[in-house]
Amino acid sequence: SEAGLKGVACGGAMISPKHPNFIVNASGASADDVKKLISLKPQVIAFEDPDLIGTGKSITTYKSKQLAHFVSLLKKSSSIPLCGAGISTIKDIKSAYNLGCKGVVIASAIADTPKPEILLKTIKEWQRNI
Image (cartoon, rainbow, N blue to C red; front, side):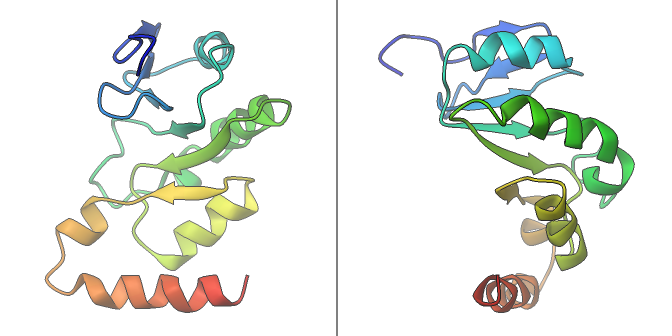
């Protein structure tokens, strides 16, 4: 934030304009785009595919190879890998962790449901057991 890098982009990867410790996939970021921004040492990098956001089609299913590659890029960095886009079930969250993510970004699955507490309770119960 102090460095004034909010919104700075490299190809399809961008430093979040809201949370400058996050890198987001703004529009089809390549591995090289992410590598360039990793050098800025963000605290967290979230891998998302804009085409999957809000669809219920999980990135862990539809882009699992790319997600695994993204996680492997971060292994030697201090950045924490997250994923989002279509994450809407506990199965999606477990898959994200199995692929090496340390957390997930969930929005539509909570905001667009009349009873978000059901998913949140399931997540909380699962977290107790990991």
